[in-house]
Length: 276
Image 1 (cartoon, rainbow, N blue to C red):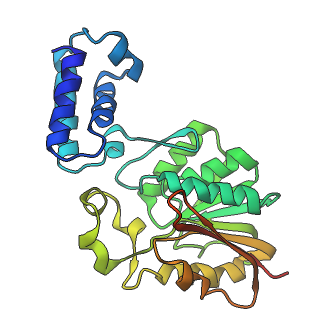
Image 2: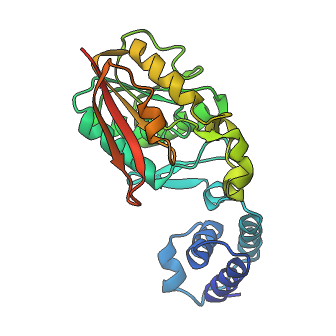
């Protein structure tokens, strides 16, 4: 079978399986099977697949049709122009989370010490260290997630201090200029309504906060008042429809409160500053 034929067949299978972006997904999976760049598919469409390549491609197509996210098949996801390793131990970095980084770069310019709470793959922490050269720390309760994040930092040349703990339990009082987090915010009762790619494959610890979905937000806001230095910033990614409830958690000690919408117009990032 030629590359052209394999691409057509894979696209057809994915279309019939109601997989989003079937052509692009087939391209990505075929490139992963061949360990090649996308340009090869179109520069040499007549090239025949070797048996081992066809076996890998078939397995990847089957996994995707079963609901496994493409990123967990290829173990790759681009974030802020860099390629990050991802595994089922970490949440797949979303494009909208890049707005979190952009907000930190704008609001927290000059922050000397930053902590990313619940770092997962390390996408936020690694990106911030490379973009700001601040002293960046990252925490996670999951040892496997920290292993992935540490690997990403090493491969991308970022100096990040990783700490295994529950949220900020291991962070000293008044030690940070900026706290950033994309926390779990899905209520446990909403599990059945999630896409199967999320529900069946992404780690529960990174998705579900508790019965209401606001449990982690409450802890982060409360702990931030203890961890931040005066004038320090707290930057949080917001879940859908969570803006008003999270804003209501902020007491009189917070100022310069701002909320940034994503490209769909959904309130996505909250930034606020602790009173000096």
